[in-house]
Image (cartoon, rainbow, N blue to C red; front, side, top):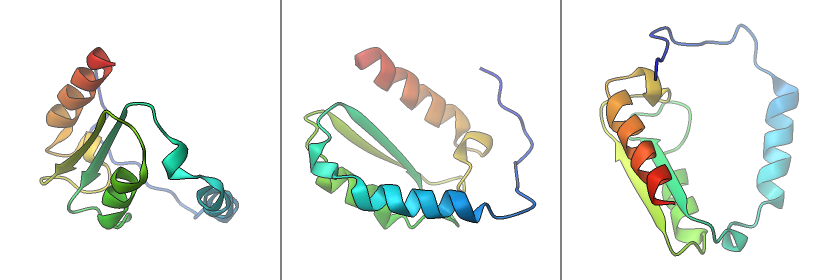
Length: 97
């Protein structure tokens, strides 16, 4: 699996997408999710509150749910120091399910 070493950044903030995302989060009922779930969150994420991963984990009804915190990367952890750990974790999860 090859991953670009370059970080993607946007030249503009897609406000319409943000609006749609906010609308979706209001409609999603986490306790209706009962499929296996892997949640990965960087502890140094500058865009997403670290508490959001715990909120999801605590509110889904999955019997098999995993919450993995990555310590050595930022929001784009697949391009950071934790990329191989993240990939191995995802591979293991997919093989299990």
